Image (tube, rainbow, N blue to C red; front, side, top):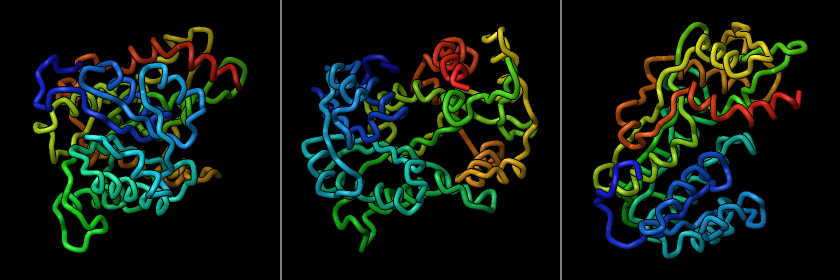
Length: 324
């Protein structure tokens, strides 16, 4: 694991419940934990236990649990008997901030009810506070963070109504994996692609979500050290110049360009979420988005740079580009 054999966690394998286990982030966490069966037993929570992704996790040794974040009783069953929990919530399926917050609160209440000893949550700053406009998919996570701290401090009248919980919050920057999903290069003409990130000659922190799993595993191995902390993860700062140069180097049969999109132009795009994503980039390129490379490297000594990640991701990106 990332920090060797030293651990302040109890002896014997602990049972970790991983939410979002069939998504990019949750599966990264689950697979990192499954690599250390002497320390962790992994319960992966999904709504679709028969999916290919769930089956692959089961083949690695995970226990697959069916639960729904809209169903508190199913969540109580999923976390029953567990010691620790990783929680990530998803905005983009419903594109509804309030639903995401409620689902996060349901999971936290289940954790408190089950006396979970350590919760790690994928959170965020309240972007609206810093850029003056809403960023629904990050502001929702800030709301869930607030509730976690409320429960941890045992505020009278809190929604959980029980004793507090030990937590660690991670905050992520831009994901490299966005380059083969929502921000994959789009074809302008034969052999020429635009990479439309509205950085406006600024830079931003970034990371491979695949490398986050090992960071979380190290946090679970050191619960006392990271209890109550908020940790900003990053593999380093990224510029559009580096992105374009990297793509042109790895895909020499294609040409990639920076169309110089501005945030105010991006938010006028006619798709749901364009304004939220523009606000996200405004925040990511500001001084308010604080991430810690040295700590990230401590949590995962094998954290990859953008160039290294791009080199190892050529096949999946190539397959996505062929779809255009």
